[in-house]
Length: 129
Image (cartoon, rainbow, N blue to C red):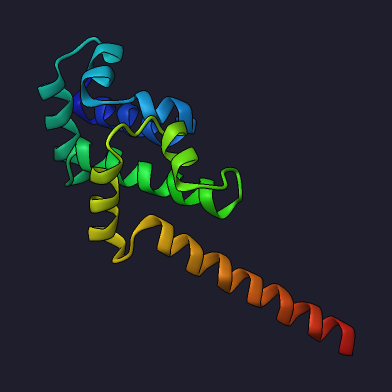
């Protein structure tokens, strides 16, 4: 398998993984599944996607976390972190805040409040039509 094929296969694995499976994925686990070294996978991934495998996993976890919270699949940040098998809550929150500017809980509250306001506005508009 060429480096390009390897990088694409790893990318597909990350982006098709369920939330539960994504929580189990690490560089070491991905290398084991592809029967190659972690450094070989990281090098191939970095070469074709211009960012690290670790960063890609982290961003994917943030995206899946947001999806779990926005869709109401989980009601609390703790539940979402358990599904994603995040063991260090404080580290996750710190990294999340660096990227989004707010803690996960605060961001979800704001999004849910906006959603509630839009639903109320829509309901008012529908009654006057």
